[in-house]
Length: 250
Image 1 (tube, rainbow, N blue to C red):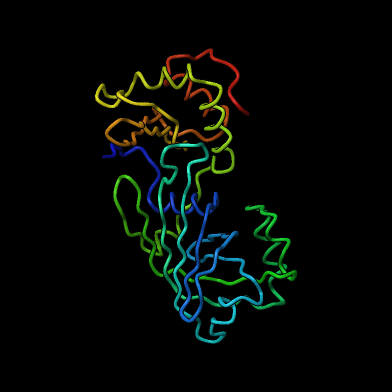
Image 2: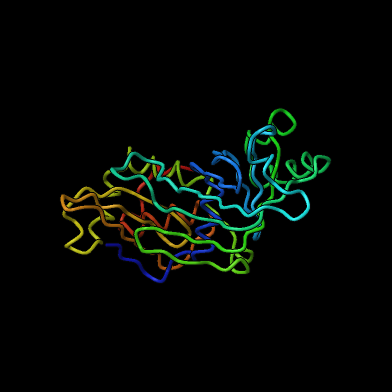
């Protein structure tokens, strides 16, 4: 059972963010074996993917009309939890090849806002495909939701998508005191277990409570959304009632 508040990212924003922090992803294309994907760049309602140049996925795509395809993205917690999956996302749509003469320029443009070493493999065993997303679904402990393509196109990733993993790992490994202070704000019935940091965004922090009867997720919202790491550090310390606690990550 998952408890939530309304002060949280939208489902579309969560999808955009999860694709930036890409964990395991699988591409299913008609007429081809499922292909593991290491690089996904979700821009508005288009997902740009890197696949092996001579793989089955590349060969199965119809250059003119495109090919129906589904991309499955798993959002993993960056720390070692009993169950690390935070959400699973399915992007359904039509897959098209990116023209060879545009791949490198597009990779450079993508790297400007979404750096990934995998982009260097373009022309060296990797090619780019474009998935025009028609429907998106996200499933988590809170349930499942369908997101229209237009809503996905208007959403942006959380501003802390790059630093979230480091912050959560630092909290879990080095700030048991802060986690303990934050845990005191949880409902009494959710304190019967091990409290672990699960997620962090501009709206607040999420915890996973690993209890004897199963896991529960709960969100502690900030009084207002934050926009940079200074505000994020201050909001966490104030939420814990420790405004002068130092040694938070940059």
